[in-house]
Image (cartoon, rainbow, N blue to C red):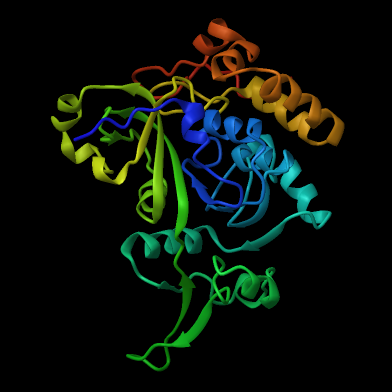
Length: 321
């Protein structure tokens, strides 16, 4: 086996303008934020994102002008903001192309891609306006072969004519980027806690990049192979990035940062304030180490550390007055 360790900046540079991507995690959990900030510093443009439940990872990319089109269920940071401010503004101004599905439908689409199937039959969209409305026009779909030719297809079951199902198209991306707790230099990955749709996203991507809190020995991970949801041959590149999901949480390592998330969402409400946020925390730092210093350094990061019995911080003040 060959070693797959590369530097974070080197990994981000692999993503060209116009690439299709998905990011791991779920709302306030385990987003590869260090990688996202690198993409913004590289001024990537016209990215095409697929996701089920993204949070500020998408919001800040959209606000920075990196994204042309998205397909998703919703974009929010739970209690900090019901809808991402820059995502909302981009939609209202017509600055972004988008298509929406239910959360389950997006996971089903990733699953179809992971299984090598062209579509997945589901029932959850029946009776929903999501099934009857299409945001991407026929012209937009025809102009971009990466988009499915239609949003979905409703059909009668060939086995039970009175039964109906919705076929949703498979997702296939150029890149999937995940942040995980542990990885080996050869690409064996350990995700602790919920995996969300990370496994399906990885299996339907051409290139999988992992950022990890820890790099551990291969033999350690192989002692419990049932806990490694992705085999080494699926992973193309591994980056060692402690606190690489900040300000989001990583189960068993640290909780989300209410102070930073509150600051982000207050800033994201206003275009000028958002640009100031980018200047301070993204463009104004050379690398992720400098970013961690800018958000409070060791003292602030230590305050977020997870309690070993819970996997999160039970004493964290989650509401700021």
